[in-house]
Length: 181
Image (cartoon, rainbow, N blue to C red; front, side, top):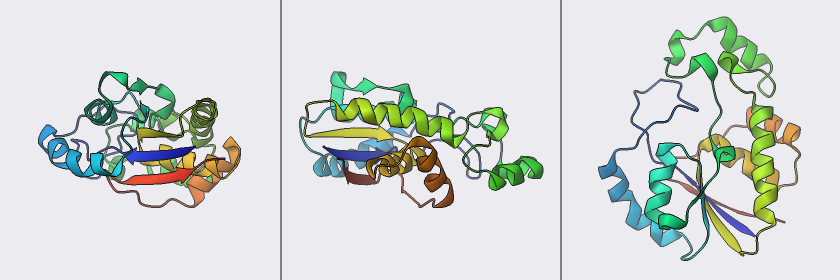
């Protein structure tokens, strides 16, 4: 199966703010401008899955209409009480503790990357049982990194370690294509 992983467009939030699991909107004009190019790169008629967070759900609805399947397992990491705080205002000791254990630490008392990897892995397993040759997944950068690791055969703990140790930039609106086995 081939997965077309699409990162949501830039959310309406100030630069430098931690917003993982916060439900943020995207500027509708920005979305309207991005849609034609995005649609041209995605397979017509493919099933569409989406994180239920607005920054993904609006884009998914514009691409897949009423047939979109919203799945909470695709949501971004929940940063607990760090959500909607400026990164510069978060206690340095907490940031250092997270840096020391990127996979298992629960930033802001939220969820760990291993927790997120477990739910993303469960989504992946369900997706692989589908009959479609491909699917479109509208989600978040963290989710894309974890799905990419899972497609390489990693278990949730290894997925989390790879995502935490080897982050890479995924642009807003970027599509990452992975072939799954």
